[in-house]
Length: 229
Image 1 (spheres, rainbow, N blue to C red):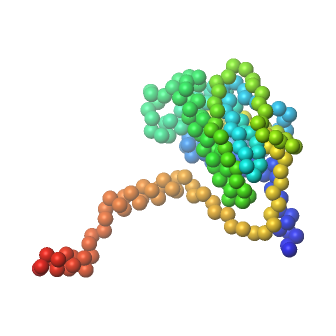
Image 2 (cartoon, one colour):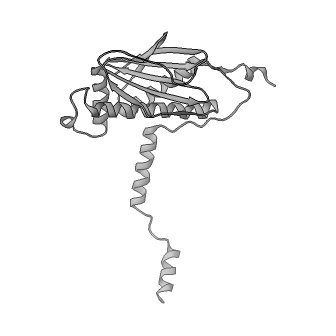
Image 3 (cartoon, rainbow, N blue to C red):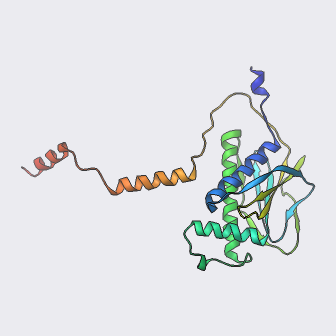
């Protein structure tokens, strides 16, 4: 057995990086803007929802944990507006307050996509499975501490700062049981195609479908024979 293969370990920081990359992947495509995260990560002792909008998702399966995203009002509105404008909505029809249900619904949907992207990568890259619950969004006036409803023997908690294109900040917090994945042998992973590439392929396929190819000579002959000509 190759000792080099056994030495490949995928731990907490790798899971956190994968989750952060899912945030970037989904928000960059959804808002058509550039979001990035800090190169520094914080070790924290508590995880919770903070004003103005907090969103959390529980996951369970191969490993258990809790993901939280905390937005202030300006950040929530920026992400919401850019998402809706990217979807073709006129600005005059958009909500103007972060307390609007529409803003919370959009952020909840984006969080669902983020965790879905992350769980897909876990299946492909770590060959295990985790399931998520429906994201919960809350408009808050004060901090609310959370605890994971699944037993974490050795919990590890992290916080990462994210920055939007307009330099607004939001935070991702992760609580996860300390775990390591050790690679025993090589295997192939299949990357998910880029969302823009998929959209272009669908549009091209639609154009081809609208203009079917002309019938061949053989097809014309068969038609004439069937008509007795």
